[in-house]
Image (cartoon, rainbow, N blue to C red; front, side):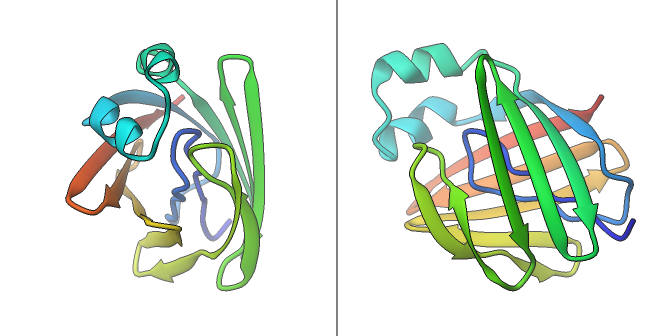
Length: 144
């Protein structure tokens, strides 16, 4: 397999690497509450979501990807082809048309005002960084 992509449930972000696809679980996050408030999530959902450890399953066939993310009882499935417009579910659950682009070992996507970059920092660790204006939210997931 040539690559993997990760869509994180509270993020519109994807991941690309030359490792085998599989499952990743959220380990830690930085600036969660501030970021979620900035995108308009209600406080009740923010409090519920801050301790949930999502699991993402990544499948790849060439440049086509299917990502299934399970967060509590919610299951989100996004499919896309790198470099082609696709309809992706964003952080708030809204479907947005966007194009996922490769840049070296990273995948980048803009979903409205949120910029997202995800990369593999070692063989088992994914780091997803989302930016909304001056607010930076970081998610770290580990292979399971």
